Length: 115
Image (cartoon, rainbow, N blue to C red; front, side, top):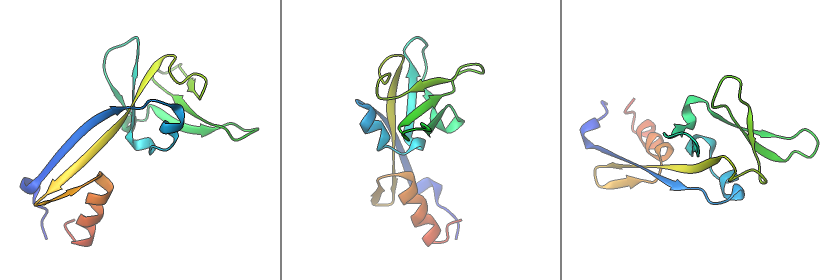
């Protein structure tokens, strides 16, 4: 079965992440960031942000890889210092049903053999 692209409506919005704990609950592929000193929005799917854990106490933190020699670390103490973080919310409307994220929509396509 062929996929009907003309029936798909994709809506992408960005919501500011207010706390580090909130950021931990968001999937990494939905996290985007903006350096407060430079214009533009850096999207995580090009590999700029990586979730890590400390060796000793296993505390979570994020590595921001926004330049070749940079290795900025963002944790609970440095959350609002240099970057603004956003959640990228993608909704897909197909026919008369709206899917709350890309994964839910792709699962439906796989179940109906659209690929």
